[in-house]
Image 1 (cartoon, one colour):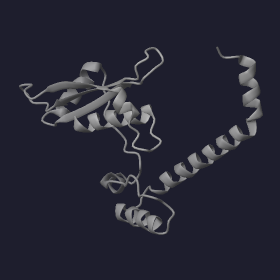
Image 2 (image 1 turned 90 degrees about the vertical axis):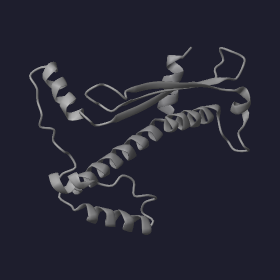
Image 3 (image 1 turned 60 degrees about the vertical axis):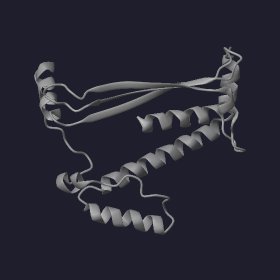
Image 4 (image 1 turned 120 degrees about the vertical axis):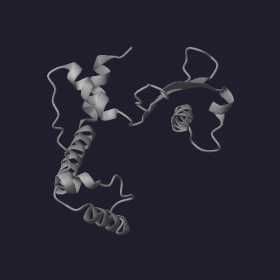
Length: 180
């Protein structure tokens, strides 16, 4: 049970901490938006050189995502989508044509962490995936899944580190999604 007044008291006691977090978050968001707008009109090679220089100077740990050719072609970080349709059928016809002969793949996982509901510390990971080559005859379409149990022994193996059950299960899910 959550006691409303205790929550109010605790939030009030930590008001300054929460406001500081919000101010920093807003400042970082504004800085990010400013940096993103500054990319408009720049050559990809210039952006890459600037990212490499920032890493060398210690200002960044990694270059992160780098711009692609669209930055130079469009001249902005937003690429407008100019298609429009009068009906769902029109949108679907456009999608069928756009995807014809182009393979798509997707994988997504879910997990069940150990809980207090059962005494046995056990978890589960499920990953489903599909691959669609979008051929005229529909051949090659695959839809599959994998399911695995994370045993108590696996959950308790922390290899001397500070791994939690959530870390272990999350990593198992990640590995299964990559293996798909």
